[in-house]
Length: 330
Ligand SMILES: [Zn+2]
Image (cartoon, rainbow, N blue to C red; front, top):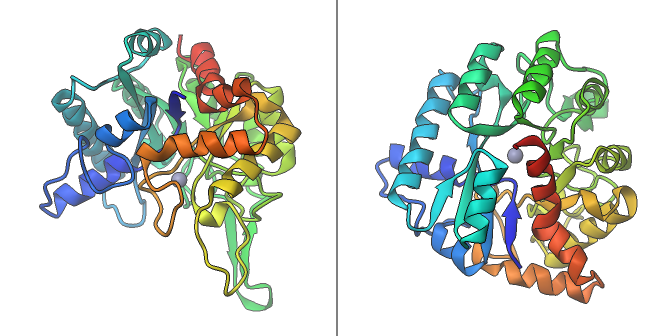
């Protein structure tokens, strides 16, 4: 079954590796995802995220620019297998020729430095989806968790701090441009504001269901319902901590059965139309049953085993996400 995946961190890994002088490329590597593995796994479209760690980067805007260059260098070097897309028409053309597509996305709205002019320039460079935050506050809003010390020590979902005025201005501009708003990593209060302030379909590119794994990175049932009603999609994330609440002593590993349980829960809560894939490949470590991008047929088998119909598997593997792309990117 042809795969459309809304999130991976592979470009960041290649960028980081090259900075250390390693000879890394997108075509073949030891990473979760490379072009040869994607070909074996029957990929149609992969989103490649420009990710910036605000606390470890002196100049987020510069790093984003350098990473976008890494992306386009790889596209040029591998024209025989894949090409970058910025519109639904281009996706369709590649799809019909059985050629893979790559979409540029950003995972940290802070790279725009709170300036919509820079947002527009990233759009011009091909960025078609963006999370407002990663795991730090920025000019636009606040990340998913509040960390408390003292007697209430721990991580809690942040339900208090909504989007800033600049964040709301960014939403308007993203909707006007046709850049897909990605609510993954954003806090609960910010997600509430996004739903209030926008009208078009949204995505949570790589987030699971909080009812099954309580991490604040995951979506509440209410958010899943809203996403479904809006015609949006959540991409199932393969990272073990977002799939299950692990008890001490349990051997932590990302399991296919857990991934499909999240799909089932999302289907019951927001309808089958709101479920997609957002692997987070190369953005996490640890044991993973779905070893790399070549193994996607194993996920299809597990879905069949747990009672998903062929039409539902098709919707989750690509149909739902392509529906959103058709609406926003045409
Ligand atoms: Zn992420």
